[in-house]
Image 1 (spheres, rainbow, N blue to C red):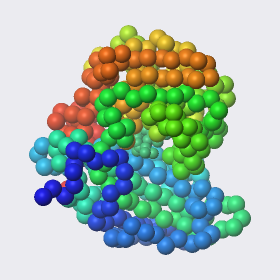
Image 2: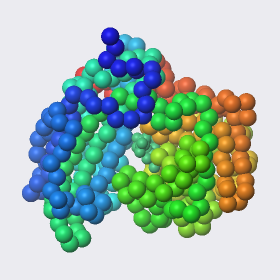
Image 3: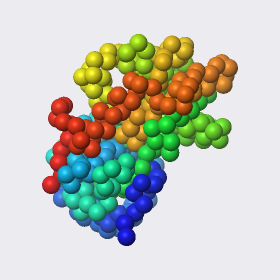
Length: 339
Ligand code: PLP
Ligand code: COI
């Protein structure tokens, strides 16, 4: 019998055998420890609970046809966690410790890596939080770093089928000089009011606009936005969005396929000029967008009118997924075999 129904996995939590934990105390990181518990013991005054000292990462490992497990751009996630830690004054996790914890947790949970061809992957969730006790508002002096894994299917249940999004004008996800560029829990908490409204109205997610002018596209829930126009891949440049590693990779892939790229502010009105639009991220991979609704402006932008993803979106998707699964040559040196 199969361990799990690999082809129908949700993007959700499934218990695996082990996770890795590591503590920072007296200015030093200790050794990573293996745990089989899904629970943590946490001080009631930990800054992670009260003052939002918490950041996380998300990356995936893929089983290749050759039986090798490949990790996508782990060093980029390691560096982003260092950036996020600095952004909310937490002790950074050294890249080498990040790598060691990742390899160990994947190796210990090899049986949970979805098989080649299932369309699923092993999602890896590194987590860093202030575990030291403080009551005054200040950074903790102790931190905990945890890495757990869970096998996942696509984030948007539709997979590579187009999803509909709603523009949100009454909630800001992040301020221009705030924490939008860091992957901290508070940004996700701030997005929930909008997300719940969008979901209740039948949309897959929310499109956030820049908080200052409400003029430009920021991002699509937990993913970056891109639009396609005349063989050009256009994606927002903004000081309040997460710098998606998937997006950065798609820009390189586009270049290799002869697709032009632009990273610049994208005004909302420009949505009417795109022939294709999509959301991209580790969890979302590429989710083509079928329709964007702007209820307050009474506007509807439609793409994929035949119900299928557009040709440029598909070219980018196919190459990204082929590299990740180990089917295409790793021409950019993004994949690391986990041994
Ligand atoms: N934007 C937000 C807010 C996210 O949570 C994510 C997911 O990590 C992304 C964008 C996509 O980033 P990445 O491609 O690095 O996963
Ligand atoms: C990811 O794509 O890894 C994310 O972090 C999205 C997640 C918040 C569901």
